[in-house]
Length: 370
Image (cartoon, rainbow, N blue to C red; front, side, top):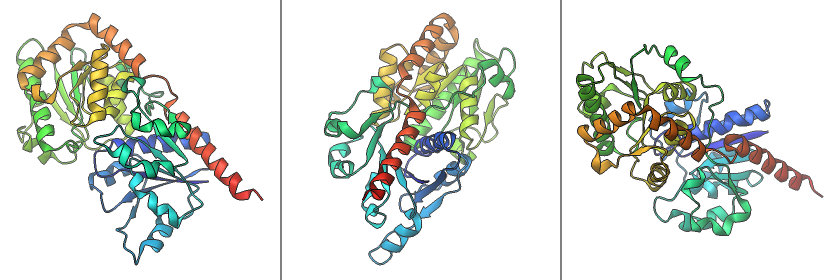
């Protein structure tokens, strides 16, 4: 059996990591399954090539399509697939005409604008639709007509093998008395203005707290593609010893950082889901897209994290929130338990992987039927 993954590649790495999580779950259920990642070259941000490689998959590229090359390109890139799974790339569904025997499953995203309504003809032709959000996000009304093919899996989480906090901290070389703030700029997927403001605010806040009552506080930056990104946000070229920088990391190492953190700065839904599931204190600065805002507001409303809107982000405001997290361990414990409860349920990646196998089996049976 062959599954082709078509993750969205025009934004950050969240779609890559979610597709990779599903791929790993499929391999756990069926070690003989073939998984292939295909990245759309027309919309590709180069950052996502390395991200896919770091996830353990060497991608192929879907070249720009024309009337003259379309059939050959589709057969070469998607031919042989039993199931095609797109992660917010359903605009590619018309290519299915070139591979009519393949089933097609789409992983949905909370709408940024009106795209769920505008894309109903695509969704009507899918074999199945996956809604990968915690229940507190709710379900948009536009999806009501597709109830029969809609599967609420909940977030795709892979935290089973993540060490406990003390072991995670030891692996990262954190010493007793060193509190750690973890933030992943990830190439600023929400734009440089947003990303620079957050990164600068976090850096200056940690700097101020170190000069105050938290001299052992550290800032750990991961998923930094290019050090120039840091300088563009106003950080010095020669970073102080209390700042650590690592490039694009594997999913396992990213989760290790999230577990080890005393505070995790969360902009996107993947980081929010993972931090909550790992029982790490969250400072929620949601990116300017609806899914991130809805999830962050829900977690804050239900006492699962502390919310700071981007318009409120200043070094002073970030420092106040960080100090509140670091100075209130009893309140934090209750918040961590609450956050983990809020993002649980639904089956996640395993439920999605079982769905892929079921859809493939149904499609195979239909082909073999007399």
